[in-house]
Length: 77
Length: 463
Image 1 (spheres, rainbow over the protein chains, first blue to last red):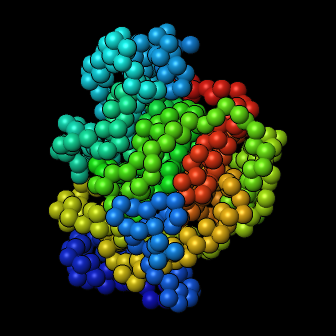
Image 2: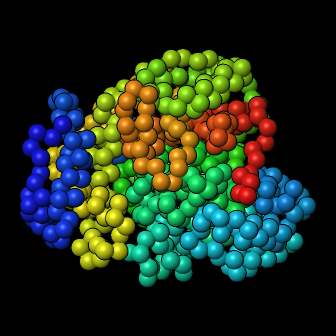
Image 3: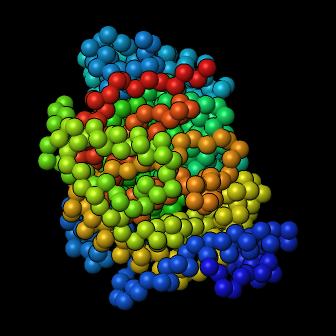
């Protein structure tokens, strides 16, 4: 799935940019797992989301109930 | 029959009728823990002294005519992600070695107020980030996995080492171990049970719920747990309700969705047969089976990972930088790799969740419940990491156990696992019932009706 595989030095550099210093002996393993995860989630690029917003503030139902302080008319669904 | 063998419902009836005292019940469960714990490893901590004091108080209250309800004097185990004031919440991790909870979580406080007696904190796969709980052994076969991440809770309930327990469920962590140990497990609707004071794995997927011997038991625990708490931002404003199902097993008019795709793909034939036989029982009770198509199945795993991985990495950001060596390797590397996921990937997962929820809403207009396997195969050997399917596919054990659970975490719909038999090796099989948001009364009614067609469940022998 992954077209551009992350090399161990790249994984180390990306992690360092995120403030996480990885010991050298972990670079290869972290790169491999990160690539695997990337391969799993990359399939979502097939979807045409158009104007669909993210469901970050999660609502299980729009009719029966709503979190305190928020209206029942949830624009997310 | 010993008191530890009683279901919650039966124990509650006996306590209310003064045929059993909370002291007798708690002592019996504590003795059972001493007997089986060396074989099972379900508990991080057993709070025997505290439990005996609480049982004596419960007995004293009962003698004075104060009966708090069906949980009065009932021994419970809490997954060790759930705060109990004064005790460590270890998350079964060395990272939390020096932890001490300063206050009760909402669920612990509600259960204590309802009269339940804590007998101990149960093992979780470290920080709930896994599906096997390696510290704990399956209640039916010590060479098999307990399932996870609420493995300790499910094993304790299945073995009689707790009358009920709580678990958490982010990708099946209540339903998977409950199914693998022959217990009932309920993942409630997202937001129905407050998570304040419960260690998070992934905020937008986490749920707390009961693991019990029977569906009726789960209903009694849910009644005590549900209700709004402003300290959990996802908590729903729903009125208090009594979830105990009625006695009438008639399911006439109920539409049961039987998936044509996904839920029976890459499923052990013994599991599929047992689940289809259970659906046949529902038909015999009057339900009408309707074949349904599960939407967007190609994207389920991607959405689950796209949400869970970066949320977990965010939760552990600080300790991953200060004490990374204290994590188990399987968890540490997922957290490290999770730091490398892009915001774009996370947002795509959130947008796909919007689409998936809308599709499931349409699906659940066609039927009242969906019936499916809880897990694709029974408990695997403790040293197995992959499962081979007949078409040549090789799947990771954890991936397989999450696969049929994830849709209910992503969509937030309630899901109940009910034991429906054993495979030829004697390992339990679970039926999963999924309902509409806040459709717990329907799920519990169907599960209870099914249960009444079968002999009373037996505890695992734990030889």
